[in-house]
Amino acid sequence: MDEKNAGMLSPYRVLDLTGERGFLGGKLLGDLGADVIKIEPPGGDPARKLGPFYHDEPHPEKSLYWMGFNTNKRGITLDIATARGREIFKKLCRKADIVIESFDPGYLDGLGLGYGSLEEINPGLIVASITGFGQTGPYKDFKAPDIVLWALSGLGYVHGDADRPPLSPSYPVSYFFSAMQAIIGALIALFQRGTTGRGQHIDAPTLLGLAWATGPEVQGLWPLNGEIVKRSGRIWPRPRTGPDGEVTYINVPLSYPCRDGGVKFFPFVEPGMLPSTNGLTRWVIEEGLASEALQNVDWTTWDWSEVTQEAADAVTESFGRFFMNHTKEELWQGARDRGIQLYPVFTPRDMVAFPQLKIRQYWQEVDHPELDARITYPGAFVKLADGSCEIRRRAPRIGEHNPEIYEKELGMSKQELEKLKRAGVI
Image (tube, rainbow, N blue to C red; front, side, top):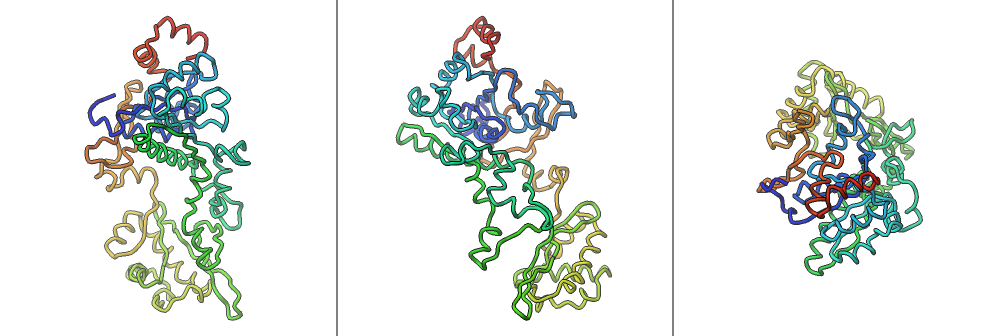
């Protein structure tokens, strides 16, 4: 490892046994300087088959998914399901500080590598387990793919269009939440170890990690006014109370298409938001694109709980026509100049070009000699004064550091390694 800006966790070693569920955890520790050893089965981790691939060429050494989540790690191959593999893993544990794993509950115990066994080898060892539902409880042995976890978290219920079945909120990222929670727990345990001298087992269920992610818009509206938030796509259904007290809903867009993509805007009428809504209204009028309804609207007296769908459509259709006359950049610049709370919907290309991220030097170029290329990566997740949170090495190739770790650190001979390789242990 490059000693320059080695990082605040550089004295610590992490053994990363995770599959794709937990890659992010080891990466975060590696970004902070820990010596993270990624342990793959012989032949490579199955996640190396996940796309997208560099230049769209499927290959276990060209998975951009693998590359992105395994930077700052050294890599070895080892089959811990074999007796010899378990012996070697235990040797590695003697000098490790943290083990991260994402196997199903009970799997490591069945191999004699659960926390109870490992703490006998190294009482200071911290083991962080990333699972769908946790190590205990009636759901612990249930399958927990991303879609199931989003569904049980409640977030699936509010994502999608009202007239269609629920959707997963995004690209499969549910396990990112538990990976982050596992690392928070491991760092706290590391701090406590400084006082007690002992490690502990961190149980990080993904469902718990998602429980808070529904946020105040879902959880908060029930205790506030008894409202159950339902999915509405890009439309925000606003409750309207009729003369007989019956509650119905009018549909108001939350996002609009524009000339080269989309923007987010809502005409809020609360006192702090009136300048924004009035500002966009004046802009639309100046360009001659306002309907008579929008020209005559008085936002100070507008009450979304009383207006009709026809009245709402009469003002918002002018906004839609106006947005289609402009690009995202034109709308974003004009909104800033006029104090309007309007935001462009960024694509990945927009993110890379976003001035705020470029000025903060967020994107980082990483050398890939094996590809004869430099690839742009998301950089440090936090800025430290000494710049020590950064990408120091690309993701490892299959078994790249076997000689470095097995020969130089464990003192094994080349002949022994060759024998282990033939036996399928490494």
